[in-house]
Length: 213
Image (tube, rainbow, N blue to C red):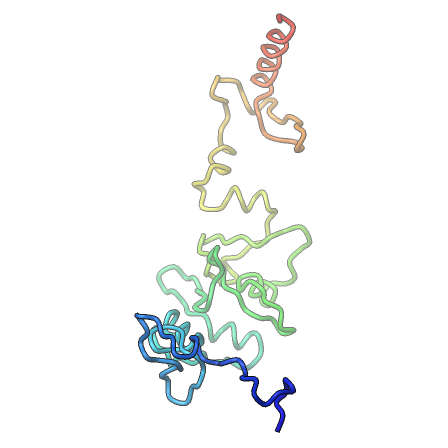
């Protein structure tokens, strides 16, 4: 019978990890996954890609993630736990790089757990506002600890120790000029908080230096 190449003498491409008869010096002798019933190609430590990643993330190559069925409220309650010391209802599932929990809503779209909790128990988030944690715990989904604020208020209030919060509390610049009288100037990027007196003095020195030459 002719092969798909039209010539019965043509050899097909080998499906082995290495060239026929060639094995690297550090070859362990494992070609497929060592997990019972798995026939996928070996990747590392005796496991295929799937089981190796399960071992890497969960510490068990045979770990199988549990799929929680039910409404979004049931899934939200299942993945949270009350912290009696702080009163926070903390998210126990996966979080993003900023520390916020992620959960799928009723239509299948991923949403932040604290935003979804606010929508379910408080109401829709007003347009242009964001949800701020009054407890400063990014995992918390307790509706009593959440409030809708502007983005500026959220940045300033976040932790009460960042540069935005500290600068917002300053009443005088480093040269002693009063910032409470006039400190908003317009730049090419928009309006910014700055000392108008210092800005005026810098501009005067610059113009004198330019015209002096």
